[in-house]
Length: 334
Image (cartoon, rainbow, N blue to C red; front, side, top):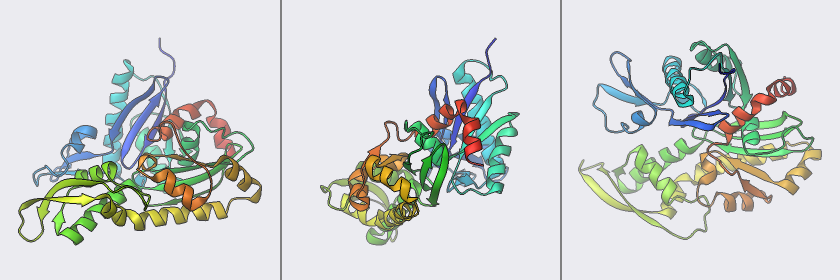
């Protein structure tokens, strides 16, 4: 018979990832398509993402997690059921009394933590542990979190950006701001609407951000054509957008992220500040992959900046790897 199943879950605003001893076995958008009248779930994950901007009035696509926390409990529970069923199929057998570690944003309230726990236990899972996102990100990035030295990690996710300074398995200082990749997409949509009178969709904004977006002001200019709807005529129109325009759109959000990181570094104990100067900061999350991110942060913070080997998967990998030391971590963070 199979032994006890152990899995880690990164329940993110943008994507939900599941890690097991086989590695990342599931990575799907945290999106659900529902019937607007009956609230019945029509599609989840990747299938639901393909429906964004293409549904009739009777169907709407929603993200049940906002800014890293559960905004719609019932829909989140349904999404987790889908994730866990799919995980069981991926593993090739029914999960037997699984142990689950799931990450929570730093600074999340007791109510928010209980909601996450309940969403998992509603599926019938009893052995559930919570781990703070910065610790999970640090473990997933391969940092020695149990050592008596500062491990600084910045996780730029879909709904939040978090910085954690970790030593001896515990969070020495952490801070978070409710700005992430989704906010950058919204900023791009708003900028193009105001400047060009063109309305584009979420997927187009995300594509612009990934393909020509740049967080570093002095970057090599790039261009990209996009299609949208003219706000006056209502007709489809194709326009050319430059990378400098994308920078202008996201700069206010970037400034808020950098302020949060600087505030955390200013509040770091002096004994650990030297470690950060020597070893730098590790970036995780989808935002770590944005063009110019390393150059921009290096210039702003004057410390070495490293991008994790698998920034999008670091938190999920960390939740899974934390299973072996979860009791030590829980003790260190009481």
